[in-house]
Image (cartoon, rainbow, N blue to C red; front, side):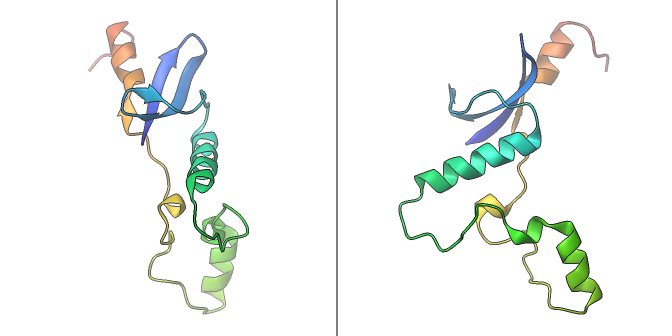
Length: 107
């Protein structure tokens, strides 16, 4: 699944796609895109779920700072083991191509 950044009549949008098929609604921020993706991935999982929430506690930067200040152990994988614990990044940037096509960006 790829995160696509695009320009449409609604402005700059993000959406998730599998191949050429759009699988998410238009989203306006990376935070919205990440939240939609996590919910989607958790909804597809068929096994027993041990987590009580889709949000990883390691993403709380204030809590991480407190652990470091108190000398507590920080795990070797600070972003977690699951793919939903990793930060999302734009995979395909159609926005840049379209803006260049309009002549709004110069190299």
